Amino acid sequence: MKRLSLIALALLVAVLGAGIFVDASAQQQAPAKAADAKPADKPADKPAAKPADAKPADPAPAKPAAAANPFNRLMIPKADRNPPPIKDGIHDPESPGTPMLQPPLDAFGGMPKSNAGNNINWVQAIKDKTINPRYDRLNPKEEPMILDLDIVREVKGFMPDVVYPHDRHTEWLDCSNCHPDIFIPQKGQNTISMAQILMGQKCGVCHGKVAFPVSECRLCHSKKKDQPKAASVSAPAAK
Image (cartoon, rainbow, N blue to C red; front, side, top):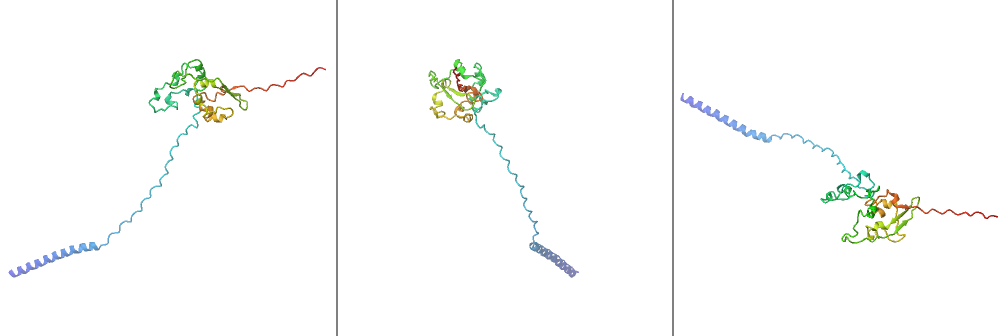
């Protein structure tokens, strides 16, 4: 019996040892097969999606066309004339001093009226002493040198000739305001046309900006053309 027990124990140890060996061998073969295994084919990379065709950028909004010429700013509807300084297009609306200026409608209350420009007859206002322009900026007692001289310019066509009165201009302007930059003070040296005036040149430097506009034709074209005299016909001598 004792001998059989020893044989059975030996068989049991042999069986258990073979199982352990088989298990270890399997574990060694597993990683080897894993190493030999070909990597699975990666899914083909999808072609990168093409960005949608970019739409061309919208063109920048066009800036409003500036007035070709600030001239004729006085040729506007009557209701739009004499706006406050902050809206007149002359003063800087961003300046803190602009709102402090007196609105024209307040200043013009007692002025003589006119149908032209800003509706003020400035020549009459000087004559009436309603205004007393300072001739010299630094010296309030300086007296203007008034030149009593009318320049007559003959014009072609049916329009009356132009009369330029120096007196009403020199009452508050110095000669250097016009001569020689705008007008050469010599007869025959100045070419003046309505096209130039409408473009803000010559007379248009002031008229239409700070003086009456060219809509008031007769204020300048004020001299009738000399009419040719009719030829006198003598009566035939009595026989």
